[in-house]
Length: 387
Image (tube, rainbow, N blue to C red; front, side, top):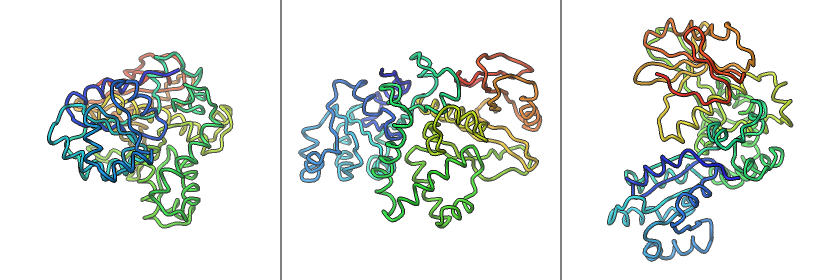
């Protein structure tokens, strides 16, 4: 089944104001399927097709004269020369929604847009499904360990392909088609080891020197490889919050994966039982909830200023969101049973925040409620802004 995507409203709004739309996101997030469904009257051109690439290269002006309005260019980054000619064409007629660009090699696509089309493009990012979309389609997993293990790529819900078949193919395709164009062929196997090591750091503070030693490359190389993963929308680094608290705080970011199914595959997990028995189950659950918040913000077309807080005394809040009205502090616990001690850090950090705050807990249970001025959310309910 095709699950409706929440980003639809954001795309439609962008198409009212920009002559070009760009939809980026990780490979197999459903970009092409969504665009064809949302814009059925647009002509679709895949620039992975060698014949189309040749047409653009040999005569880009004639190509754009033929494809002049209401066109989707998929894998547009394959033909960088197209972008400067698109600039000329849309400057002559800035009709909103004239072209749509999509692609999986997000570094190359963003680079081409920045160089030639700045100010002319409305940018949206599509990630794997969020919990809200799954709930609306009535396909929510029965428990959080199933959600974590299965992951959220649309193909798993559309076709039922099991994780043990989907993710090996996904990683191979990603490295062979996306990464191979960004790093040397001699380093591809080392990069694969690096990717697996990143999984062990999910939900943890990053130590670039330790990772470099383990992989056998330099720290600058590790930092550049993290940029590759981020630009591919596989991982993100959550920065520490450092404003106004008057405390010595941690300066290292924490690492998270956008998709927990990919994370489980890289950790060599074979079933939901492996999730429950994992020695850092709390980190997996934390990854699930924080990735959900990141995905949902992007699908809504909103900027989310997300951080974590940890000071030199190891006092920590898993997720901190900065808003114009104050801070939202979120504690994330895999416990299925609520206990008052789950709120301890929230109240401690709240006392030193020095500004208006809203406190919430996301836990592994199935029911939400309010206790001691804290809103408690079950794992499957998207956490809404409350400040």
